[in-house]
Image (cartoon, rainbow, N blue to C red; front, side, top):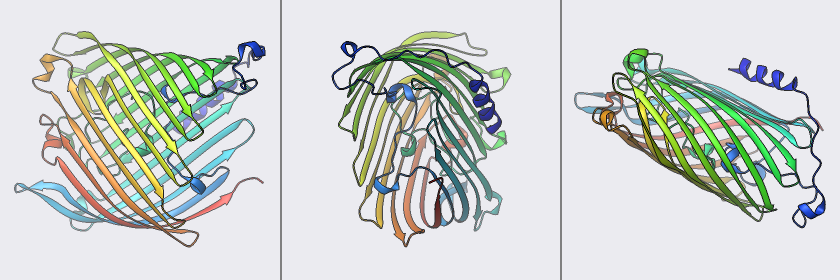
Length: 444
């Protein structure tokens, strides 16, 4: 995991920084744009929209802390025809680093966790969460970005969801969110990298690659689900029309492998999209993306199947002094996420945060995803399903270092052909946590 990140940086550092193109004469630059670096719009950046507000946004810091939490789960296991509830107690230390220099901006966060069940001690778990982000400006017009995320958990509420509010982006999702087996061991790892090169004052090209892995260590816990891997590559052309408007085109290739070799599902996709991004003032951005997508899928013993489908995405991000909002919709054919086969996936997600006062804040988040099997033969045994989730939480800051939080989370999943899901389709969780956090500035 981290070794791959370090190797990627080391290899890239050996590339020669070829001669850069100086911005064109003023006649090729919209009024007021001379010398202004271009940005990579959300449809091609792949990065999540920021959700912090006001003074919550920091750079050049070392942060650490400890969180204690107790929660009530209404459905931990299914027995005698009824779901069984339990109370959990958790402890999560955290450490995070955010460092910025003239050329490099990198953030690193790590949080192990330990959860204990009051009645069902067999479900006691140890979590691992790791994330790393790097932006390296190799020269004035050549930038490299890399992101990595690793998660290990056995709780439906602790696992990273691509449609959760904290990870809303303006691009189409590389894999479906899939179905999440409640309280089953699960490990996921995602790595992506991108190079962007501003070839003139208002033109940019770039490309990148992605790799994701999903693993269920104990297959008997997840009947109907399976491990999956994916690899992908992309290229884009980005044109700045004015300070507030960008248009361009993208190509994205992905390959998904799921399940053991005897019943392996193999899906490849090729998406050709045009995009448009509008920045209204500094706080609001709107992005649209769309085009055709070709997919081919095969799963033994069935014959291969190929066709075309539309690929669409729309997103909006708004930030003010005390508020933030991010929302997106995407439609594409994809695979992975523990599901076998290729699916026509539609996803909607949103996240909002309000800093009510210096001490009080509220968060709201919600998502919905439907997955329909595109192969009519496989759809008879594995038609797909849908997932809906929502979160509401209230935070109270006490003093400079302590935060008390209370929240409610709900998840509903409907996958009739997946035994690991159908037994516990609905999960509700209410929790209260107390966190101690500290920050130390880095550098001057």
